[in-house]
Image (tube, rainbow, N blue to C red; front, top):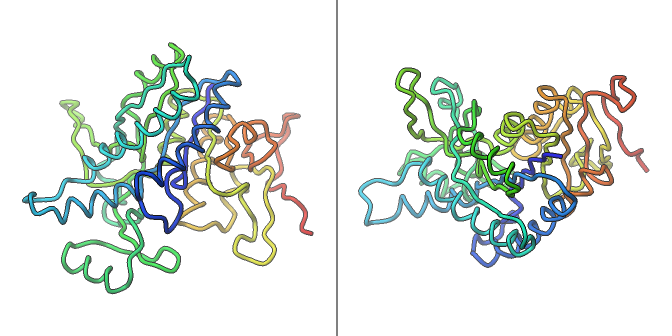
Length: 320
């Protein structure tokens, strides 16, 4: 089975943690064990990952570096995070899969230059800001900020992905038995000139989950696994009686009241992949990717039930 496994931001940093290298190495070590189990079970695996905290850190460093006359653009910073996170993942996977080649690619994602998202920055990057810090950044650097939980964070444009440029290379690597790390941070955002075919970077960060769904579709993957810090998608999230979902249709998943900054993009990516391919999408815990695939944990998103009839809109564990 060909699987695209999308690591959530918690694969490297938990909310509120310092973005030190040692902290990220610890989390990657745990994620690699879970991913290696998929490969050891005989599956072809492509890994994608987030980069929100890392690109935010690099952006601040670039903007405050006195040696620069202008900060580096977000597309270049995104490529830097692919290299950094890619090498951490690759080294851990090499250690657990000594007989398998592992490659981390710097990957580009084409977007529409007229996407309305460029006028409505809504993608969180970087760490938490107090209100005075946010106001200062808005005034001095032209940032856009928004509330993420109890704090403010920087927001940037997040256009929808149109195509992942390196898909042919990924197919070739998979055919050679390679474990591929690609489309990190949603890919380096680029636009393509319709006449010359030339690409250029744009100031944006593409949603990692939507890019993972698109990559899975372009690769003809059988399954999209979105690995995060919860065991299931929950109904009644944030209430006194949340209920974990076992299985849900794309329509049922979209109908749920899910947090915009965290679970909503994952739900949209899972629903989109199932609708466009008929394959399996699932959302579940980072430390048990094989269990998510087998259905022993996580929330499975399916268009049809196993008997060929339309599946339940929502099948949840009964409330206790």
